[in-house]
Image (tube, rainbow, N blue to C red):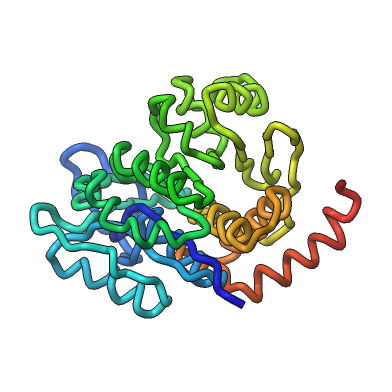
Length: 316
């Protein structure tokens, strides 16, 4: 059986994390512990996750001409991601994020997306042949809007299913939605997309309906431990999450979107695809760190079957 083809147009960044007894104030120097450096970026994470779930996965993205770039290329070689369309740009450094965690698990993060900010329509067009061969094209918002919009446009042009994971969220022009088959915000991203405060009290169902009126065909709102809301022309349902022991929720959104994308690429319907997505998102929470937590296909299939015979058995 031919592997499903998934192309991710997105970002790579190296995460540098350190623990400190408290978050620093201006001018303060303190000693930290537990320094860690590793691969990140939502597009990169999703390309790795879709490969682990059995897809033929490719990433279209940009890195710098520096030593940090090798973290990306080594990762893709190890995980079986097609990195032929990950290009080096000398004008900017590879993207990085500095994360400081305190003893309560609170953090602050400073990002320099570096070479990712050079993504434009031409960079996406360079991967048009790969997009044409894809079952699913997905993108994120850690790259400029023009690049994300072009990814959706080319996906639609060539008959692929298109997924926009609007993270980190920002207001978008309505015309981008015309080429989006599936929009997958979490609850705060849903609100930000509509120009509202992230804690706006209106229901996510009401706000998802507003996005559909702006042109999105199908909206899937991820709700963390609750599961996901699916709103389409025919459906208005909740998909419950599978119960897991939560260790670290970082990367759960990337795992959800990847599972959802792979299931759609395999021809599964939207409800089954969302179920597979919530299973993958749940499994990502059971390990510390994003890359270690992204599930393998065997794990995802096993939890999916368990959930199908328990929490989803009475769902229509």
